[in-house]
Image (cartoon, rainbow, N blue to C red; front, side, top):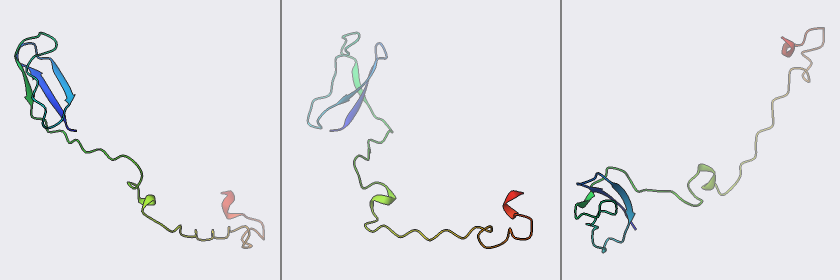
Length: 88
């Protein structure tokens, strides 16, 4: 059901109302109780994403194997001879 925005011409009261499209528009302001309530055209979008399936990871049915980590310079023998390149 869509959300409609209403504003009173008399007191300026604003209200958002969830109504069926077939429901009649509201005309009586709940604040000042005058017949000056009217529906306002809104530029806001009413698009809301709910549930699963909206993330990149939700669309990937198979999990890819992660690549093995590159060997550290220490395990490759770079630290032999005195200086460790990671200690800088």
